[in-house]
Structures are given as C-alpha cells and as structure tokens.
Image (cartoon, rainbow, N blue to C red; front, side, top):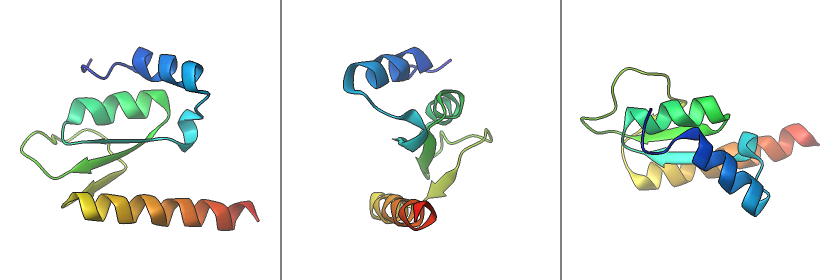
Length: 82
C-alpha cells in the first residue's frame, strides 16, 4: 500500500466529519490513486512518471486543470441533487 494508506483517510473522515464519497485525492503517484479508490474518494492524478497503470478517476496535465475538474465535478453534483 502507499504512504497515503486508507486508514489515514478514515481517521481524517472521522476527525473532521468528512464524507469520503465527496472527497478528492490529488497526487502524482499511482499508490495514492489506489488508496483513494479503496477509500471511496475521487482520484485526480497529475501527469508524471509515477502515474502507472492503476485505476484513477482523472489524469490531468497540471494543477490548474485539476482545480477546474474539481469545480466541474462539484457543479455537476449540485445539478444532479436538484
């Protein structure tokens, strides 16, 4: 498993009352994307040599694209809730 083990996500969710289904993990490593998948988070990976071929929800070229994707996902989630 990665340094961002799912136990850390669970601990953070408990401590700060987070809904992991509505949380995002931003990284440049495949291990973090795998931990996000197991924890139920959305993974947004920055293109890098460490991305690998594991599941990730989104692979984006830079931080600006990641921010834009999160804003888009949040807007879509609000529309779907109406």
